[in-house]
Image 1 (cartoon, rainbow, N blue to C red):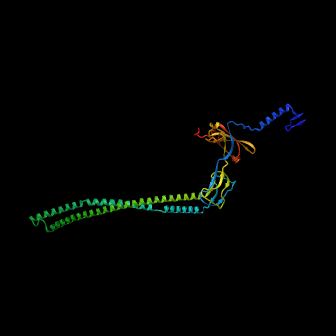
Image 2: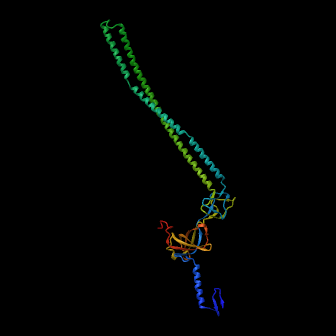
Length: 386
């Protein structure tokens, strides 16, 4: 009796019916055990699905210059913001130093400036003198218009004249009624009163002259206050201009810092350097690619669905991806992010999903299986899609 490779017996060149039945059942059981639990997931299948790069950058030189330093090589893992190299930055560094020095000088001048304080002090002193001059002018004006002293002197003069006139008339009747000595005393008193009246008028004239002088001084002081007010405003305006100038110099520092930073090559995201276009010592023009970087934390999954089934598919739907990891199938969940509005010559529509790639275990270009689930992913759909 002969046996084949399946352990089945042959008798006279023929296989027994029992052996055939055993073979069929055994093969079916083996096929069922070999299939993963999710080999037939629900949803729309995607044909020719493969992994693609989501984040990629052809990192350019932002300025023209000589490449003096490269800190990475193809295969290096980089993080967002990490410095990867730089162009010759000596001129940009010097420009930044000069701009910072100009700012320091302007700040020192602004801090040491006392023009506003001096103008304010002068203005306050002028206003105090103006108040004093205004008070003195008021007093002088009142004194100049007060004729009380003249009126009093005139009254005393009239009394002295009246006494002298009565004495004269009395002497006309009798020489002995008023002695010579009394007559002379009355005459002297009358003369003194006349002099007092003239003096009172002169004093009032002088008071009027002093009042005019005080008024002129008041006007002069008012002019001085107005001039000092203008000087104070000018000092404040100059200070504001100095502050604006300082702001302009600070902006110049910021511009110099940006120009210096533009000579650095920095990673735009976490990823891997996959290609180096320039070597140290070579000249790079602005916009010319120096390094090519791809990100592996998130990947696209692309494939095609039949146009007849594509109409119900919308971005935001959940997707299921089965990839081979260490020769074992692994299920990964993601979200559909794009459905092309175009239909190709085969009647298919391009769809694109997005998945996380923790540990970067998957690589772009790998073939995978992909299904689009029938319901929108509540976790990933936006408010506008709802």
